[in-house]
Image (cartoon, rainbow over the protein chains, first blue to last red):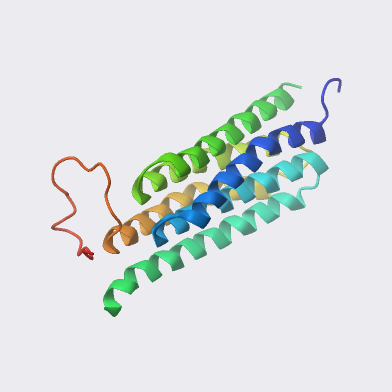
Length: 93
Length: 111
C-alpha cells in the first residue's frame, strides 16, 4: 500500500491520545473530591484501551486487543468497588 | 482497501472523541458534569478505536468484538453506580437550576 503505513498512522493518532492522557492525569492529581478522581480513573482506563488498540494496529498482533479486554474488565470491577466505597463512607459516620 | 480507509476514519474519530472527553473532564465544573463528558464521549471513542483496529489489522476480530460488547455494557453501568455514589456522598452540584429532583428519593450526605 502506498502512503503512510500502519505504524505511522498509529504513531500520529497516539499524539492526541497522549494529550488526553495528560488532561485526565491532571484531573486525577488535582481533582478536588474523591468522585473527580474516580471519574478521572475511568477516563485513564479508556485512554489505556485506546493505546492498546493502537498498538495492535501498529504491530499487527491481536494479543494487544486481549490487553484492551483485560483493562476493560478491571475497569468495571474497580469502578464498582470505588462506588461501593463512596456509598459506604456515609454509613460509617 | 475500503476497509482500510474506513478503519483509519474510525480510529481518527475515536481518538478525537476521547480527546474531547478528556477536555470535558478538565473544563466542566463539578463531578457529575465531568462524569457526563467522560462516560458518553469516552464510551463511543473507545468503541470506535477498537472497531477501527479490527478493520485495519490482520488481527483476529473475536476479542475485539468481545471488548466492544463489554465496553458498551459496563462503562455506562459503572458510571451510573459512580454517579449514584457521588450523589449520596454529597458531591457539590454546580449550576443546578430549580429544585433537586432526587432530594426525596436518595439519602444525601449534607456537608
